[in-house]
Length: 135
Image 1 (cartoon, rainbow, N blue to C red):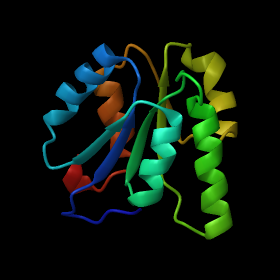
Image 2: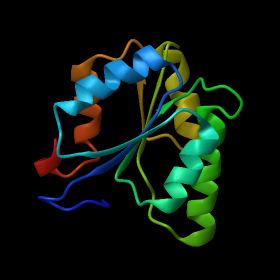
Image 3: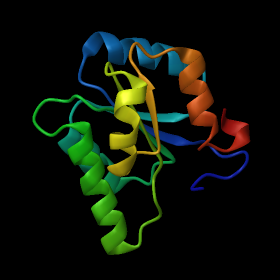
């Protein structure tokens, strides 16, 4: 795991919808010890990830132009080619969990949360990947 106990986790949130982004930022602001970076596209997510070692990526699947699946594939390819440590990616989408999770997992996603995102589900998923002191 990239972070360590007592560390400040770095989280990349990728969400293009301003209202969803604002709601998620408000929810996550309760955990103000996190270093949050927010971008609105798959391309921007890859560029931000290349420049910063993130402990976790929160990724909307349905983004314009380059979607979340394509961004995940690109990140996983770079990790494989460079030996960079795998960054956990939690995806969210309005699609139903049961029908979509298997496909998302095959693309390299680590967890999936259906929209609308419930804070309990989000925090439970994040706990799987962040150091105990950060959740």
